[in-house]
Image 1 (cartoon, rainbow, N blue to C red):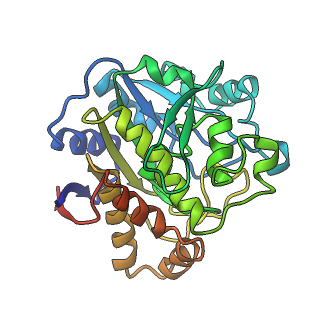
Image 2: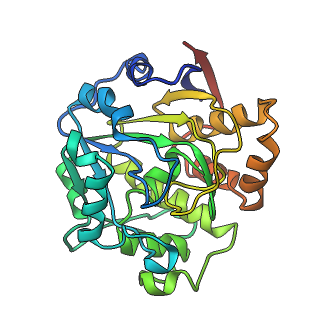
Amino acid sequence: MRANVYFTREITPEKVVELYRALGVELPGKVAVKVHSGEKGNQNFLRPEFWCPMVEEVHGTIVECNTAYGDAAGGVRDHTESHRKLLQEHGWTKYFDVDLMDAEGPDVVWPIPNGKVLKENHVGKHILHYDSMLVLAHFKGHPMGGYGGALKQLAIGCASRAGKALIHSAGKTDDRFKTWEQHASSVVFPEAMADAASSVIEHFRGKIAFINVMKNLSVDCDCCAVAEDPCMKDIGILASLDPVAIDQACIDLVMQSDDPGREHFMERVNSRNGIHTIEAAAELGFGSRAYDLTEL
């Protein structure tokens, strides 16, 4: 079944809202708005001012989770206190209510009965406070996953510290101090991400929407304290109810670009087997790689 994906080349806060409205849905109840709030020192993440009209449109609460990596990777988001301080420094708390979903335990453990690699996903217990979710993704590269988009936001983005450790180690450990020593292969790590994403989709089934912004196209993620500058010109904004289709459409737009930085960007994606995350998610049945792109 083909999914609908809406696209605009104009990147403005107002266009984000326009694309959301094109989806023809109204997210019910209390809306969790998942963003990437940016690591300390990162220059590429999308600022809170950019997202203001969209968050106001759904009367949402910004949600984030602590990371599994720590000082050794240059990050400060692995502890609630320092993470909250950074959220304030980056301006998120100035504009929005912000909820660190795993700020207090115990985690919620969701089973993944048909998982390729993982049998369970660990998420911050505050996720149960929300009736629906809006996933706002900054599409870009990623040091381990090849690229980051809607599926990464669902998987690593919604996982608690223990959940992130499970994903990065492909189920070997939920100990964040061991996960970096037990990196999963370029086959099972994308599959673990797809597994984790499937559990979030299952929880919010029919009450979740996705927006990807193809801006500041670095090969590095917003989780990198020292990130490479963007290697491609901005492409646009996409919106869909299908996380597989929206990520596939973003990859296709990069591939179709005549930008001289395309090869560098795709080398990062392909060297990490990033497209396998999309393949695995489609095989799990919670999205389609076939889509119709409507430009607005």
